[in-house]
Length: 235
Image (cartoon, rainbow, N blue to C red; front, side, top):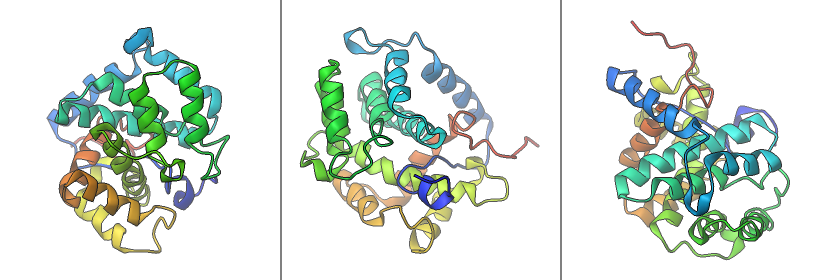
């Protein structure tokens, strides 16, 4: 995929947020230490470094890696909200698009990835979530994990695009209202599927502003890692 905002931030974008507040800065530091620490253990003796290595093996594009980091952070945030397993949910977020660069065809993406992860012994719930986020695989979204991955994937791209068109290019200056306005502009980030966003909201039974606010809040915690810290300065 190209490096234009519309495409790169479209199906596989990166970030945004609210005005920086003290508690966000604290949360951002704490979360940054968590998701970037290579000794964080995954189930079945997998480390985050192992999952990151798989991502980097198949994905060279910086924008796609940032998207993976974005969705990982969002999934960890939602795991806390829904009392899910943060390591499993984070792993699903980090790896959900790992095969996209090499297998961008809609009929192969996530299907090939699911097979690769299965062969490498990754947890079945991670494989299920990865495959279910692309409806062309025919894998139904059954668990809450499946539904959340789908519900944050496209939306995080729209949030990223909204941040990148601001003068500061910072997620810290984006809120749900700004994303909603861009959502209505069909010419903006045209590759972002509005239908998938609405479908994700419906499956979770949540409102747009509520869900988007949570996605933004999660993305703020990793703004430096995903290139959306921007030019915002304190004071």
